[in-house]
Length: 153
Image (cartoon, rainbow, N blue to C red; front, side):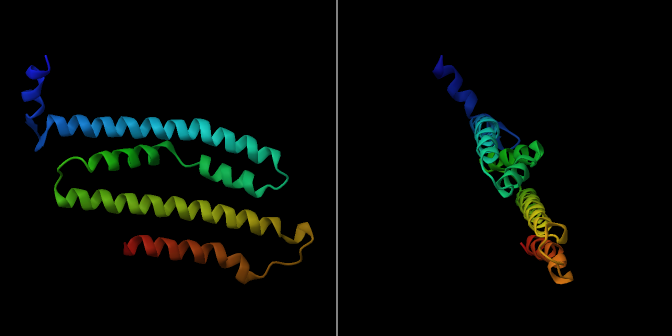
């Protein structure tokens, strides 16, 4: 039976052999499974651990990681499975830039949420005194620097 399937694996579809397509599909499915396990198992453990601690910073950190949408994880899986296929360099470059922009956006969003949380923890209502306008401007300055870095890549 294997001898009958062997020639079929070397058939070319859209410039790639069937073997390459199957390998890319297996890579995509494997990464999706690993990400699913990560999100279900590890994040639930981190949430339970964060609830046991006294500080709220770790709760905020776990919440920020958990809010990353499934679409980003799907695209990351798609991107890595795409590496096993022969695609035009222009399409590969678009996929590279899109991944970089998505990752920088979510790193910036998580960092901004954490900075906002820290600033709110030291707000005047908590007895820490007034927060200077320079410190209030910090998250926006940080985000703009990260966005510019993403665009330069």
